[in-house]
Length: 367
Ligand code: UD1
Image 1 (cartoon, rainbow, N blue to C red):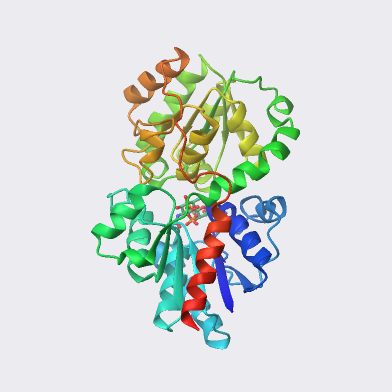
Image 2 (image 1 turned 30 degrees about the vertical axis):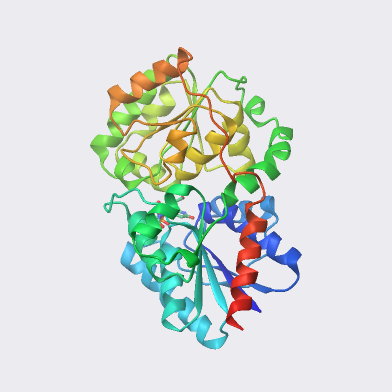
């Protein structure tokens, strides 16, 4: 039995790692790792492969950046070419990035079965490119692996047959649990001069927050204001770096003297910063989930979330990009007025093994 595991952008790598390992341990399935090249800078890419022990990709599609149409089309075309040469029994795609829909589409058109890991999540906000990618990928997937109960409800409502849907838990939390000790051993916050519980961690990369210079300026001014109460550390995504430079805002952050601006950091470095901080301010989907497990207050700078369990049982509060809402939530954190995380079913470090078992069973059904 042969499968392709597809990864392209940073958030895919921590999801692929535990699945690849669990499938390798089964010893019954040949795996080909396909890297689409959506993310290509070493700091967005190679560093995750080496830290997370992911084998080198068997194929690299070299897609690179571009408009959504151009990037998706390049991946679609080059993955199709690969499939025409050598066709696996199934293609496994992760998450909601452009690489996810592009490879799912190339596969399904050639009669290759599609497995979607992290299926069913819905923000119900179609202005987000990821929401389109999720809805379309789920519509053509043959086997849908879901991380939280809301995902099952969404898929059933969209008419996906129940027998295709499997609630397996959150594979990204497998990676978190595996890497926690190694990340602690780095002593990374101390190396940056940060004390435990005495700083906030900021990340920002969603187009809705960074592409509009007016919104970005408002957020930068707010970060400077909040940093007067609690120093902030801000690893800056390449998209955000470009937007900050374009809007002449990078200096303002740096000159505050209370905001430590970093280039993109590794998985373990980010985990170390997250675990030891007082509060996270982010628009990342993954960090909403990780803070829920670490029990760190998370101000989610989005108007909605496709991961509602992080609000109902985790530590996330939706604050959008509205300065007053963020200010109020930040004050609540500092005053200790914040919900404590509840246990999250199936976010237990074993989701990768469950995914591997479902995939093995699914492939048996094909032969
Ligand atoms: C993509 C995903 C998003 C995910 C994010 C995590 C889509 C639609 N979006 O957004 O869901 O949360 O990855 O990082 O798939 N760039 C570099 N170096 C790189 C990669 C990108 O400099 O290695 C810059 C380029 O200027 C590029 C821009 O970042 O144009 C955006 O990259 P892109 O892959 O299009 O989207 P992300 O914003 O990274």
